[in-house]
Image 1 (cartoon, rainbow, N blue to C red):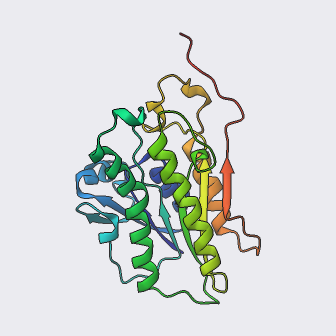
Image 2: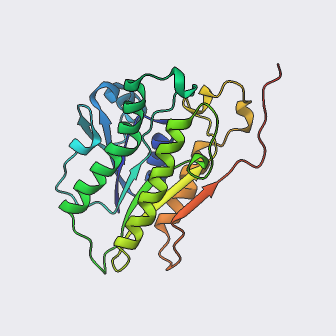
Image 3: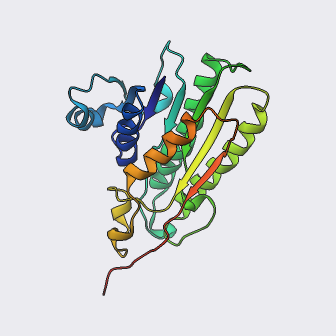
Amino acid sequence: MRAAIFGASGGLAKALAHALLEHAWQVDLVTRKANLAKIQDEFNGDGMAVHVVERAYAEFTSSHDFDAYFFPQALFAPKPLIEMSDAEIAREIEVGFLDVIQAARKLLAAHPAKQDARRDYCFVGSTSAYAGFKNTSVYCAVKHGLLGFVRAMNDEYAQTGTRFWLFSMGTMDTSMGRKLVEQDPSSFLNPKEVAERMVDAIASRSNLFEPEVILRRRTIRFREK
């Protein structure tokens, strides 16, 4: 089995790569040129293929027909909407939503779905796909958009072996999660545990299919003021 992970320099992406390797998958990493050094430092000697794009992940091309694709990339810069510039809004939507959909479209067109061949498109949502939180309006809009996209694509490909997942989790202990400075990171989700749940879900050969997986935090703690 072989998987491609986009946005491979992120905390969850790295955890996914390790989880897949532990399940004896081959892993290809897709990263922007600016993040290449981070990938090389993390996975030096693991023998994984690394694909570099200049700006957009929709630039990625491969003749290989992967069994699974993971799209964890997103931008997260919590602040009130009125403090965001038009450029910041556009970039957050481009990275977390537009580029993701365009990359998926390109892959679907290059590797047509078959009824008897399973292929998984795994998108990373957030509990923000089901609720709204202050100071994260654009991020919430992006994740709500991914939820609608996954639901529509599962209907569009219902008679094939191609499946679309949305894995939505609470705040993880990553560099992105730690931007929530008012929260106690001891209550953040462990990205390794999240990645293992994701890989277990798609690796199962059962006919069970849970297209929307929500992993919430049982306890949320805040820093003392």
